[in-house]
Length: 148
Image (cartoon, rainbow, N blue to C red; front, side, top):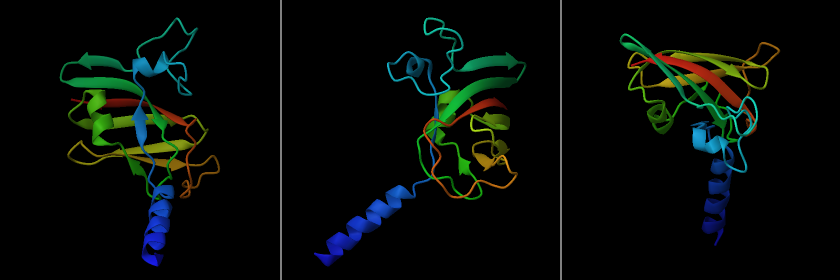
C-alpha cells in the first residue's frame, strides 16, 4: 500500500512539473465557443482571418502563427516546439524565428542546425530569465517562422 501511495504521489508531482507545451492556434480554434486568448480574431467574431498566414518567396517560406500555452511549467533554459506543432506550421525545417509574448516579457528563439528543434527562452520584464513556474493558459506567442 505504501508503494502504491508513493508511486501515486510521484506521478502527481511529475505532472505538476510538466514542461510547457506551446500549441499552434488553428483557424477552427478561433470560431469555437471558448476561443483561446490572443486568438487571431482582430475585429469582430465574424471577421476571422487565418491564424496561420503563409507567404513564399523563392525557396524560403515565412509563416506567422500564434502559439498558446497549455499552462505547463517553464523549463529553465527554454522549452521547445513539439514536432506536432512544427508539423502544423507546414515547414520541414525552420531557419529563423522571431516571437513576441503576450505577458510583456521578451522571447529569444533559437533553432538548432537541423532546423527541427525550435526553442523559446522567456525573459521577464525585469530582464531576468523566467523561473521554473507555470505559464498561464492566457499567455500566447505571436511568431514569424522562416524556413522550408
